[in-house]
Each structure stands twice: as structure tokens, then as C-alpha cells.
Length: 487
Ligand SMILES: [Zn+2]
Image (cartoon, rainbow, N blue to C red; front, side, top):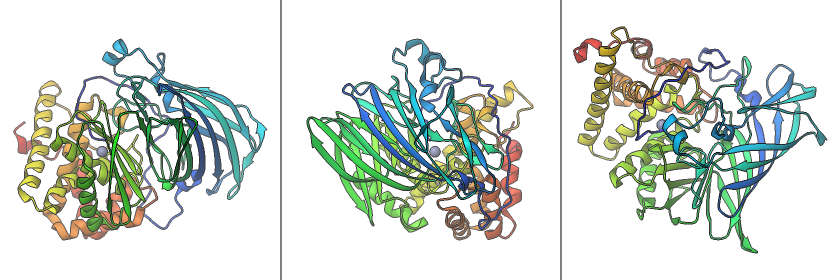
């Protein structure tokens, strides 16, 4: 995620999962693979783009070591209900919003038989009469009506556009402590999902353009309805954006098809393709067959999903390009390499912020890179100065979960800006060549898998010869730069 707009609010949410940091070992069987799944989604979006009907089938395979006696799904649209306990809406939005959202599950079948299910806010539990044993599978089928919310947050639209982001029941992450059931948070990206495969059919009136994650394998029209079929592999989510106003252009980067869905009149397809070329050169090939960049009215600057990103249509051209680069880097760091957004948002955001600045250097503009780094440091210093005046004992640790940050401003300044400086320090310590080796080793080791903060630190420490850990921990856990900025 990249935020363009910052609001102040307080949150005090408790997540039922404790932080667990596994030792770095890329070859060990990852507990996250226990929640590997194959999804089939059939989504019919109604005229007016404010309602959709969903049929979903999930084949869940237990590739862990223990019997699993229930499945837990996350129903994120329920954070957009008017009476949601942990609302997706900020307080000022709640006052003016008049179209709320939600998802109503009509029935659940397990292996063909009607099954009980219990919905509690954004959580749905499906108890299993017969536990799923290691290496066995279970098939869950469900029907749902989705009320598409108003507003400019992730899930929602305004009648001419529908952002189907975090819109369908997705399995919670199954980790060492079992199913993770994390509350919604307005700060950060409170999501943690495992890689899965998707077969998706989305239909809408035929005046609606349909952008999706994955690879679109067919687009058909008949009886006034347009239907898109798409598949995705190794994707930890599936997103779609629909609009009656899109102008679409295409380009390519290697084997990856680039699509740009414009509302503002800008056409950034060629820019996206060139930026993709640059990061393909840096990391290795783009991890998905297609990459769709969708403009939208949006509260945030941008938001990443595998193979699809949303960017704020009201940004200036230069701002759009910066946001596109940030969300593009996430395709490698955050999407292909997964991490726990609720508890360790820094794992992908700090590195992505650094690489989005480093893009300028890779593109041959050293001065712009230096300016970006200086801007990061300035923003963080300004935040810290104010924060220390109000709370002299404040410690700006980066390694906190999203529930421990008080404001979006704090999250942005600490996780993004200070996190970026952490990588600048590593670059100064080890040199650009070694830093690149550490970043690409981390990518190769955890591509299409999940990395914890400890995994990331261990990988950097391996490559940078044992120097990285102390530097990283000083940023992650303590305030080493207080003296440098005069407070
Ligand atoms: Zn981000």
C-alpha cells in the first residue's frame, strides 16, 4: 500500500494471534502451506455495480502435520457494514457515507452435504464433522450475496466503478498456532493469506470493462452481458476492478502483458512496461503473466494485489508514476514473496519503499534517487520531532503489528520512511552490489512462499556476512537515530 492522504485516529485492537518468528530455513516445510487451496469463483455483478452474486468452491488440502477440524474464512466486506465492530471506515467517512456493504452467506456445503457455519463479523467458521488429515482435502461450496460498499476504500465503488478488493470469503492463514483470526485495522494492510490457485468467472453488463488478477483466458459477450474468465496460480489473493468509464491500453514487458485502465486520460501502459523491464532486470522475471494497473477514485495513493494494482486517479502524472513503481515492486516483494501484513507490515513495505526510490537510480537518475532518500529522512524526522515533543519517551520501533500504531501518519513515517532508511544504511554498509545480492537471494528463497521478519533478517545476514542483523535490529526495535536529528 502507499498512502497519499493521512488521517489521525486511535486504534486499540487486539489480535488473537501471537507473534511467532521462525528461524530462517527456506527448506523447512512452511506451516503456511497447510492453507494451500484451489478457489473457483463465479461472480455476477448486477447493473449499477452495487451488488453481486457469488458461487465459490474451495478445495482445501491439509499439507501440515495435524488434523484440522474446522475451516476459517475471512469475510472482509463485513468490515464495511454500517454496524461493523471494527469498521473499515474512518470516523469522518461514517458521517457522510450512505452506501454500506457486506456479504451474506446463503449456504455452505462440505463435500456435497449441507454444513453448519457461523458468521461473526469478518470471521466465518465452518466446523468439519470429519477432520481433514494431513495430505487429505475437503471441498467447500458456498453461495453469497455481496453488497458493494460506497466510498473510496479498498472494497467499494460509486455506480460507475466497483473495486472488488478483498471481496470474497478467503481462507484465513493457517500457521503454527492454527487459524489466524486477525481483526480488521484501518491502519496498514491487516491481511495474511497463503498462496492459492484461482479459476474465476466474472460477468457484468456489457458496457463494463473488467480488470482482473491472473491471466484472462476469455472475454465473451451475449444477451447484454460481458463475461471474463481468468486463472491465477501462486496468488495469495484475487482482485477485480470494473468500470463503465475505462479506456484501456496495452503494452508488454518480456512475456508479461501490461494493461492500463485509465479514468483520467493518462496512458501509462508504456511507462509501466519500461518500469517492469527495469525490475525484471533487477529481480528476475515478472512473477505473473499479466499486470493490470487500474485507476480509481481512491482514499489511498495505491494498493497492490497479485497481478493487479489500484492507483488513485486524481494524482498528478509524476505522483502516479511513483505510486505505480511502489505497487509494481510489491509484485515481487509482498505478492510473490508473502508476509504477514497484520503483524509484520515492515517486511514488505520498508523494502518496497527503498526499492521504489532506488528505481530512479536504476533508471539512470541518481539525483532523483538521492532526493527520494532525503525526502524519506525529512518526513520521518518531522514526524519524530512532533512525536517526541508530545511523548518524550516515544520509541519508533518499526517491528510492531498494525494494531500498535496510533495513526496512519505514524505508520507511514515509521514503517515506510524509517524502514527505507534502514536499507539505505545497509547499502552504505555493504555496497549496492551486495545489497542487491541480499535482496535477490531473499526473493529467490521465498518466491511463492511466506517469509517472516526473522527470515528476512537471516537472509540479509547470510549474504552481508553477519553485519546486517545488528543494523536491522537497531532500526526495527530501537531509536538509534535520535541524536542525528537533534531531539
Ligand atoms: Zn506498499
